[in-house]
Length: 566
Image (cartoon, rainbow, N blue to C red):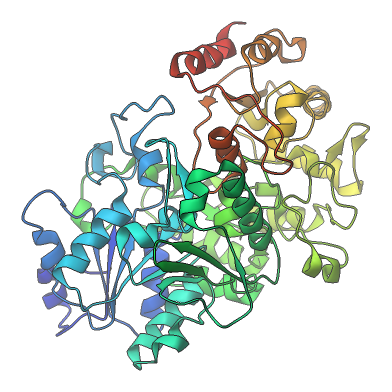
């Protein structure tokens, strides 16, 4: 396990540390936690890595001093969530708990954790590079709307004074920058590493796209929306350019990403020696987020669904990066070594569970494509929606000794196997029947998000008629196999375009009669999403047409209350 204190470093016999990682989360050595992945990747390249989880930023800063200076750099992440989403509800009320802290206690990380941690480190050790990453840094890399301050904020590079920013999934860029800093590579070489962001006094010489400056975006919502369209377009392309955004006298420069990870690269990451356990320092303490994922297995990354309110594609990418069946089955075998494992995999999935191994029939067309979504407003004709390889995966995992059940806890896109006329191909019916019978623990959860097509269109979701088809197919399977299972729909209230009358219509929709309403979500504008741009600007960034936005907190609460008026 990675050391977290000077005593633990001494016990390993180390005389120095190469990289020290600071995180807003408790440290859990599980591949679902980004800090653990980065630590294991760096370790695999021969570096000595220590972790400082949830440092105290309020006292004399001893947590920031206790391990001294690293040989290479400090790495900083807010954790698995943006710290503001972690701290506050959609009503801007402080949450009373934190799932990523021992015993779920709140208050163990600051607001805007990346900025707070980085400023402290730069003040204490101005000569040591600080590299920021994770979801908070990634989604705040450009000018962005901050819901909690109700204002545009500049790139987190500007606020934090970090030396470099890694956006997206950071395994390859972190290894590249460690190697470059280790051999004292010149600055201009480091700045060419893909997925890297930095501040510069000059515009890069390479091919680039110049965005509207931060100051102009503050004055003009149209220019902010225009910037966002370019950022999103380039993030959804296989081959993109450097994006440059002026802020004050400096330029925020964000490099294009690495190509999507290959199957071999994905397998190599998940083959690293994760213990899948919390650090021993938490002995006897419960970490709620760990309880939810400790017996889960990630099958792939990325999502081409393109929901306007979702940050997954903005961080993980649109292109699906899958592991091999052999790699996933091997991880399933190792679960039996974990304490308390009873043979049940809690989630065999990913951001969207049924996108495993999916891509275009003609990948050359995908190389040129810049669509935000392969499914909206209608499924791409080039998209191969076959679930055959996913069915092969389920079969392989079911044959692993010691595995009794593998449940699908992740979201499922039913527009991948259904259209208004029914199943889309020969694998679709087999897939849905397999999921309902063998991978559902009594309740199958799906997310239509709304019933009104005018709202769904602004969400980037398929029409509600598709959910009606799903319910019909689900009920038919349950009757065929004499199952008393429930279909549980999730919805969002308060999304741009959603008025009170839309929620009234949802509450009275007869197609929801008899269904259990388990979870509702009041829309929260998060950085780097189409929906947050709509919320701030009051317009659809795609066409600049006005969009109704409910900003009144009390009216947003009333919208949410309609979920239960049945």
